[in-house]
Image (cartoon, rainbow, N blue to C red; front, top):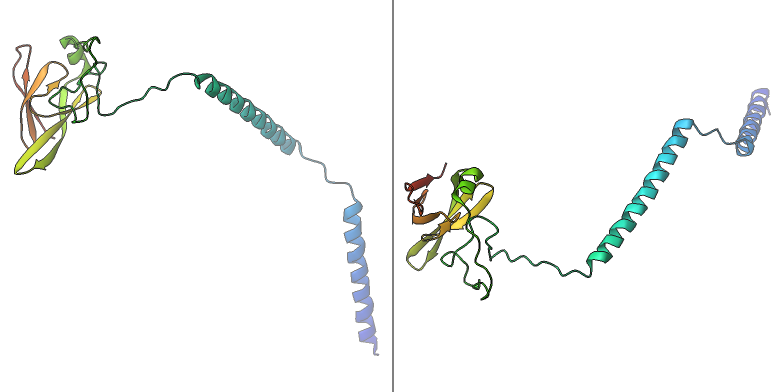
Length: 185
């Protein structure tokens, strides 16, 4: 064995010894102190978890309270008098039924309310073909409501649709006002 090889072995053994002592020393050393920012973040997470559990319990309790109530079923094909632009028998779908006898008819919307709700705007036109005939339905915005109306339908309880073309709808005012022509923009 020559001197350089012996020196390399001594250095290698010393490096392994230092590495082993360092590895054992880190396991025995005390854990580093937790920073105050990290502790505050952990507390915030804990509080958020508690709030989430409390909110979940409140929602479950509220859901159980509402379980005894009857669910209100909405029929998108049947309109009531609560909304302006209620469908009439001329525009009601084939499956819709008439109101039950003994119920009050829907209340008419006063003309002042119609003007306050904003102007009528033709926002679209739908066409369907039945045999050789083309049937058109106007999509009219009356204030914040959307009304689907065919020829002969009432719009907002005040106007009657008298004619529909591919890009316009003619409405007669039932209160004696002038005829309106709504055009697509």
